[in-house]
Length: 166
Image (cartoon, rainbow, N blue to C red; front, side):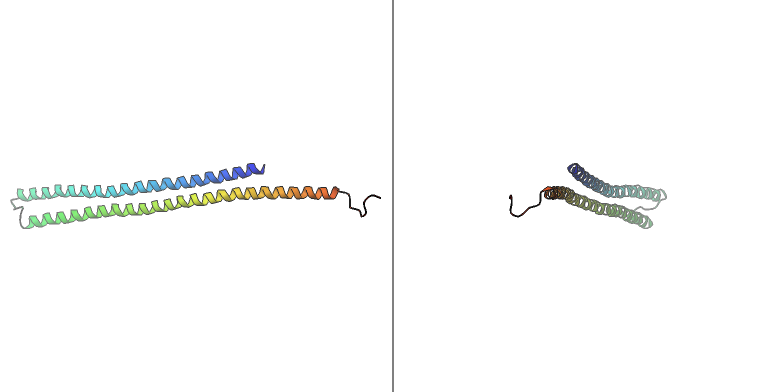
């Protein structure tokens, strides 16, 4: 009976270990995927901003030309430069934001990886400890049983007398 309980405890500990490990491993993989997606999203947003900048600059030049202004000098160049500067800044900020988010997610992934490794290591140690405790309890119970049997045998033995048969 004690071996069955020990086996169940060992199996339960092993299953809990595997569950903790696989959960943390899955969370690590998800955080890494989210980090990659976040970084790509930042780059995509930067590209969208730069494409929008080209449309806005083109519309501003067209409006200036329609009003009879030269598009290569004066206020038109200043407006074009301001659009360029603002768009480059916004694109850089979008890319930096995506990168920063990806780094935070990579840090989370690292923590999950560490947790998975810790769960595996401590789980294995716990499993061995449960098995060893079960073995120790079984050995102690066996020794106690043998000791009780020896006590019963000694109690049932006739007392020793000196001199033997007469």
